[in-house]
Image (cartoon, rainbow, N blue to C red; front, side):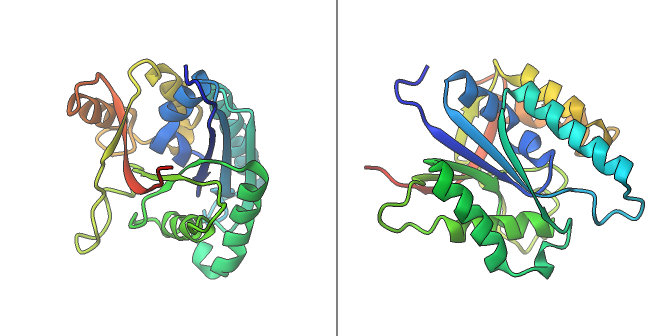
Length: 227
């Protein structure tokens, strides 16, 4: 257990990104009695040809079940257009994130890698970095980017690659991540798709075994400010 409670903000473009990227780390923070808030920038269904009220309701239920599995009680959804976040001003997105930060005062922020294939991931990353400008008195001291299978590894070969330097041992928290993933069955695919349960577990095993753990989640360090 941490001696000092931390305030942790997770900024995800879509519901399921938070579990894919840092679900077990979220559960670990909560087990350490840290305060965790998760925000979602889109509803995740708006760009789909067959999106409907029923699908949106199913998505909301999946999100709620995933949050319960991870132990998250504080979460919020915005309604920026799914897979079209580049059609709205960056400033409007930044302002929403800035408002959350001003109210919640997190010291740690987890969000997307800046060169993911998915446009919403990239815009979310840019908005987070803008909202977390390192000015005097800002609460955020650590920013970590997570990897999302079927987006991070599908980036263009000409783009900078994800470089994991911050490794979190999630061996004890894999069951919570798995339960949360199962809430998002509609978003999972059959193996050998990279967003299959088999591949998600394989990545966790690789990240862990590469650093002496059974399972791990890996992050790219965007910023760490030491006092």
